[in-house]
Image (cartoon, rainbow, N blue to C red; front, side):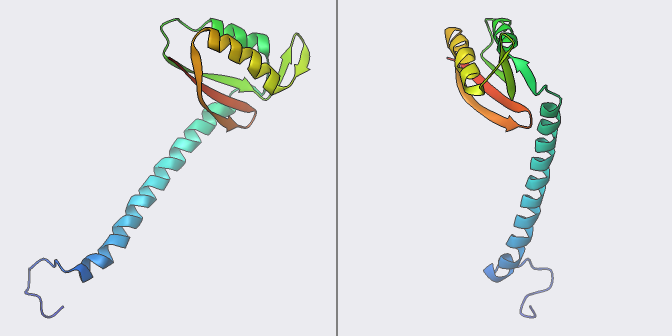
Length: 124
């Protein structure tokens, strides 16, 4: 770099080529840290939820939602019962889904976690 004047900023692409990967790495390193923090926070919240429940409890929870609610989340445990008997999660979600559709809630996705799933719903 002896051909550069002292104190003058370098504008050549050759110099920028060396800087870009460095700053790119700093950016993605910060993004990964933020993503890990968010994942940990969500995992802690989901870990506190029960792994067993009943369809009746889920229906009561859906019925207790206020009518002005536009979006919500529903925790569905992995092991469910219906009137005291074990029931498959698919059957339970069909019953709960029918109730949700009667309140104009539509599925927006879910997040799987140990012990169950966190379903997201929106009202349209």
